[in-house]
Image (cartoon, rainbow, N blue to C red; front, top):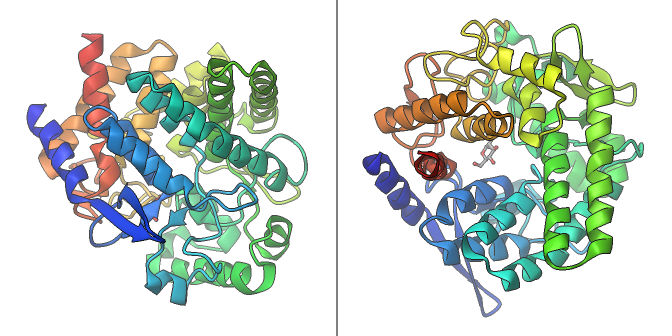
Length: 408
Ligand code: GLC
């Protein structure tokens, strides 16, 4: 374990970047030193969960750098400190950030640092940006007012080419080609650039992708509850209550609208008619991580996770049910294993008192990274690594190891 841990620390040092802009320095970790330069929203939050154990000061700076990209309306973009290439050819926002967003897990990242450092001043510093960010999500991204937030581009979920989106884009799973799928996604960005100017209601109008995603809503629900906790810690009872109620509303909406009793799992809702997108992926199990599934539902979710014919492969957790026609053991988010997904599953299992299974999953994840290095994604049967070669959030093994150590 020491070897993996040291490797993870080296990786996070290797991917460190410092940028000087308008007389200020920004420090962050890029997801990969070749494929993903710049700073990404949810990647940074995962980096921080690892960094906090050995360099909490850098972790704080990473979040400061991220929040420096916040827009006046409160949104936090999926990419900040965009390189000139992206500014010139992809995201025309008039800033050096993109205009779309990504999973809202920032409150947990802030809290994760606080847990270790007890630094109240940092909590205070992050509190206003967090409130503005969550208020933007709850207003701009909930156009039908049902307490579920919407996304208008697959990139906003971070799960770019999940088979969940196949029916929306008319993709035949048997003929899926990653480069082909990039065309409609880039077209959407062009529409946001030229037609909607990144105004949420117009983005919704022009986008063929209008989804209340189960994963986004579970992150949102849990992180709104974390924000309430931060408000409470800072002595603001009013805001604590506001965010607690908001999180409860979202939990209730997830449980009422997104659960399918026939298959015992939760799914995304698409379009104004809220059609269920019934592809089973581990993201269907995230109500465990959010802690909002009633015990009987949690049992069914855990049964999917532990089923060797669904998700419990040699190296779990494939990002699609292995029985699904689109499942592909080497293709990006269409069936490979990602360390962040496993980390979320471990977190969910712990929340539901399944320490043994959580431990087993953490150990297999650590073994996978030890065998194959800090890759972007892995084969669920052989652990062979694919994609980026020095991928930042695979360093989450540090957090897994730390938690295992504390439990034993
Ligand atoms: C890919 C992933 C996305 C991640 C980004 C940077 O686009 O799908 O989730 O944030 O790379 O690592």
